[in-house]
Image (cartoon, rainbow, N blue to C red; front, side, top):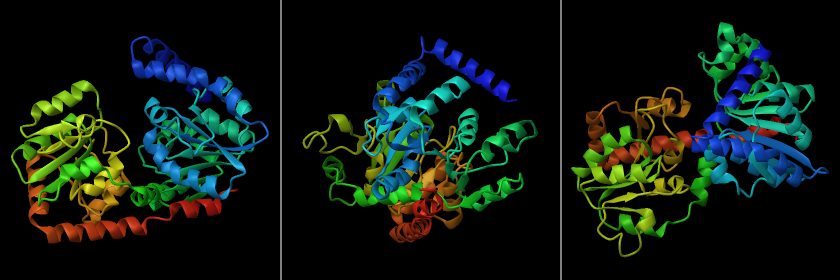
Length: 410
């Protein structure tokens, strides 16, 4: 089966090669991977010890970041190699100061795997959340390099737990330790005889608390909000399906201000949002102390600010729930505010738990959205009660990084 896996990877690599002539993301991926060996030859210090962190994209990077920075601070004799698979992660964090070397991860074919590991020679490897590259894991195991999974989450529908995917389960045995988010994941793994598992939780709780502590004021956003009595809804990582629900309500409710940070900020999407607005709006990139006066909607058309902007909300809406799945609810929840999102949240433990404790709310249509927002706008006591519940939840789930560090062979 490993042969079939490798053949499939070669075909996938060929597909990316062909697609790169027509698709920008595929082209960036191909060029980025092509440059990796040169980056490693030029930047890897052959006399140093490296811990290799692999994160698929930006979300997984934020998940692994607390551990990267804790190791950086406490174990300075290690250097950090950080790899991405997705251009969206690499593009935003290619200049991240917490890592010594940053590059794309080459495809998981045996030749490229062995070349990569020869150039890096890591002392340790850490994969974040759901990264299971079979050949990388098998080769790390063959070389006796300690390898960890951090903030892993497992569900019965994954390939490991299907009859035709039993061979792939061997990848899990290559980890020195799997640090998983919940007891359900540990039980599922134990049923397959995989017991080198520790239930530690999700490092994102530590990350959002750190973001909250470090958040700086954003003067233009503060000016936009003003000192009036209007409530502020922050809609983060919104998609068109989310906007079809949010914007009509906003248009009809003058007591509500809206800050919207769409997931896609290309020109066509921004124009589409503006075409649906019936109240004064402005893009952050065009705003200044004069032009922002009198605006009711602020459109965030840049990356990197959303996690700090949630601090200005009384209510948050997290996008993606009418598509493949919701984005990061914890970035908003850390500010102790009610969190709303669409119906596709089942794969996200924190969303399920927020709903169960009364801090998160899933909506399936516009009427549900209207009913919930009306309640939170009119009932301050309800908002405060909900916020208190969420604050306790975030606090109780923090400290994950410390638990992991105690079990790693550092």
